[in-house]
Image 1: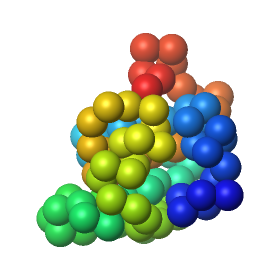
Image 2: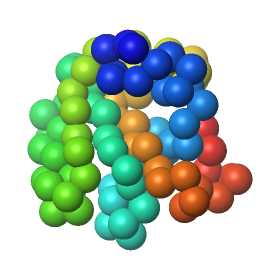
Image 3: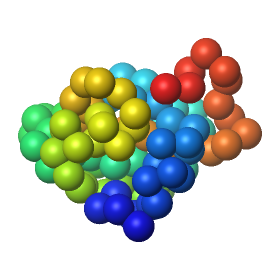
Image 4: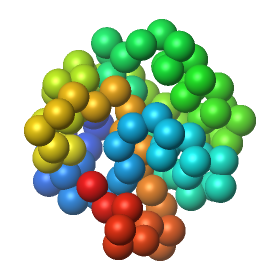
Length: 96
């Protein structure tokens, strides 16, 4: 279990979107299972995502740095927001 509440393998392999815009879009359409924000995420982004999660009744946790979150997702750039998509809702072109 890592600092994000999932095993490293589960975190990397789980269907997800990276970034605020894609996460908010999936939250609005009811396709999101849970959201992880980095601890060093911009305050405005964090507030917007937390409000959208509350409205959609989706758990939102804060953990790690943007660099840590990006690495955990298997990408080579920082990630402030990662949204885990309900498995049946992800189209192949959105997998990160």
